[in-house]
Amino acid sequence: MTDSTSPTIVLVHGAFADASSWNGVIKRLQAAGHQVAAPPNPLRGIAHDSAYIASYFEQIEGPVLAVGHSYGGAVISNAAEQSDNVVGLVFVAAFAPDEGERLGEVEGESKDSVLMSTLEQLQYPTGRGSETAVESAIDPAKFHDAFAADLPAEQAALMAATPRPVAEFAFSEASGRPAWRSLPSWAVVATGDRAAGTDVIRSMAERAGAIITEVEGSHVIMVSQPQVVAEVIATAAAAALDRPGALTGASQSR
Image (cartoon, rainbow, N blue to C red; front, side):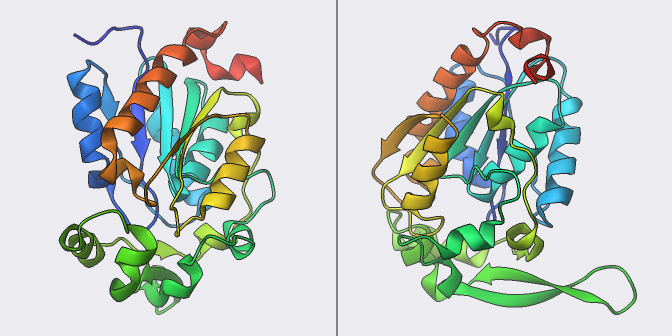
């Protein structure tokens, strides 16, 4: 039975994915008695997506542990800064940008990432007449190598056929004040991450003061090694509530 004082674990997916990417982790966390939710991340840009996820956090009664994969890490860090009930952050092969940073610029500095060379530009309607805006998807032929190299080719091909494109604003908008400045953080760093880039993810996690677990695997480490990721999340869920004032809202420490 779920402990009523335990945080609800909210899993936020990243770009080119959907909430089903957390299925293996959800199965293990639920089996251990945790309350888990995995909302859709709109993938329309830092400001838009952070506001959406913040509103999701705020509609949960009790404390929340926010977990983000890839671009979802930037979203949870911005969203948690707008929410009063988030008690901790977990970054899973995820970006943890500082205020003013843009993910596109950060990616350009990575020596490990090949992501930008795999992207195809698409257009989507903005809802204002015939106006369109730019979004990106990964070339299916490059998906396995860049995104999911430790998964069987057949499984990676299925993921490549069901991507969710991400708006260009996700890479070009400046990030806001990060919640990792005031909240305890944990991070799973995949040593073979060729999408976000192991070097960038490790550096950001260190800067955020996160407790880091390094795992051999690709960018989709939560798919290839869900047990390890679930264990880190469960550890964070228990530890986040040990800090003074955690149950009365994260805003007290800000």
